[in-house]
Structure formats: structure tokens, C-alpha cells
Image (tube, rainbow, N blue to C red; front, top):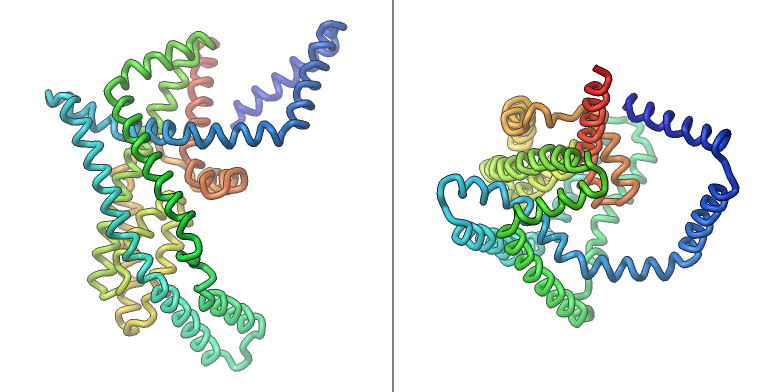
Length: 370
């Protein structure tokens, strides 16, 4: 961070020197032209926004396909080292991922949708029970707590407004399904193509980047190494979390054990907050069970969290990919502020990329100063 601030200050100093010594009429005209172009772009933002929206729709399947190939390639490369041909591994791997995705859509989502109303009702009853305990233990309960509790319960009970009117929206739903199916098929085709020519494509990207700046391939390789390790570790931990917490909630007799396993797995996409929120929901929906089961569930969640934090996560994550909690919280907050939910999920990879760029730049500066 200090190095980055030093680079910024050095740039400001150079700009100041340019204005003090090298400012000429031609240079001033160039600056004015640039400002004029920026101003014209801002005036036509509506047009550019529409163009970018169309471009996003067109490019999204290709981006998803590249993403799938990027995630799957390490497995394909590993199988190649075992003398298994890409002609076998790529179709089988992609088909297995596709079947897993279809299984989730066909089996898990209807299960979650059908149990959603009961799940919400369970949360509402749990909040009401907590408030009843609060009233019993306080001689003078706060009106603010009462108002907040009633508002939250009313919000949960008004679940009908959460779900769309499917008969009315049926044409839109059909169009969305067709669009989703088309994009998915195109993304899979792109992923297969990229996987077969992965080395050729990556070499082309590196060659193109070198034509921009001779050091850019070094930065791209560094970012790729950092982010790929993080993604691989994240996927492994998501599978482990799903198995751990699905089994835990199932053994404790929780009715929505599969939902909780999915929530805990997806919670890893939001560092710190995601898993904590999922556990809070799990405990709330468990309050309809016996008090002994609830207490035991809380104890087991705490034990499992410590095992995950001090044993499993250090084993899965590479030591160099560790991020300090303060930087994690800052990255998540900044990403959510800029891009919303997508920004929250991309915050950690973005931070790791920036950190790797700064690390490589600092190493280069140190080498030059030797």
C-alpha cells in the first residue's frame, strides 16, 4: 500500500513538472481535446450505455465459457500428466459438470422452492420465540425492540409478495428459460473449444500483452497463479462445507438440512459474512426443535467452525494466498459498494490480483536498485 501511494505521488510530481516546464500550446491543445472527448462521451452516455448492455448480452456466454475453461483446465492438465488424452477428459469433465448443474436445477431448486414457505414460517416462529424469551426475562421490555420484532415478523409473514405470480409471468418465464438454455449451450461449446486450445489461446494473450508492454506477461502470469490457487481452494472448501453442514444438520434432525448445506457452501463466496449469516439462519430455523437439540447444534457449529478455521482451511489454502481480515473486510465492502452482490464475490480475487501486481512491481524496483 505504501508503495502504491509512492507511485501515485511520483506521478503527481511528474504531472506538476510537466505543467511547470514542458507546457506548450500543442500539449495544452491535446489536453483540451481529451477533455472534450470525455465530455462528449458523458453527453452520449445513454447511447453508450445501451451499446454496452447489448455487448454484455452478446459476450456473457463467452465470458462464462472462458470462466468454466479456466476452472476446469487444472483438472484436464493433471489428467494429461497421467497420459489420458484431452479428447477423453474434456468431454467427460464438461458433461459431468453439466449433469451436476442439471441435477441441481431439477432436484435441489424445486426442493428449496417447495420448502421455502415452511422455511420462512419457521424463521418467523423462531423470531417470535426469541422475543417471548426477551419479554419474560425483562420487567420493562423496550418498545423499540417490540416494534422492530413486529416489523420483521410482518415482513417474513408477507412471503406471498416475495414470490412471482407464475401464471401471469409464464410467457416471460418461458422466454427466460429458452434464453438461459441457449446461453448455457453456447457457454459449454466455448468452454470445450477453449479447453482444447487452452495453451494456444493463453500464449496468444501473452504475446498480445507483450506488444502493449514488455513486462505485462509477467503480471498476467502472476495474477493467474494467485487467482487460480484461490479458486481451486475455494471450490474444494465449498464441497467440504456442503458435506460437513448437510451431515451436521441432518444428524441433528433439522428439516432443511440440504438447504443449510447449500447456504453454507455458497456462504464462502462472501467471506466472513456469508457463513455467519447462514449459521444464524440455521439456528433460527432450529428453534422449533427441542432446547437440547438447539444447544447441541450451537455447540457443534462452534466446534466445526474452529476445525474449519484452524485445520481444514490452512490445509486447503496455500499460505501465500492468505489475506488479513482487515483487507478482506475492506475489499468486500468496496466491491459491494461498486458492483453490489457481484462485487462482493469478485472482491477477494480482485484484491489478490492488485496485491500480486504491487508485489511484482516492488520486486522489480528492488532488483533495479541492487
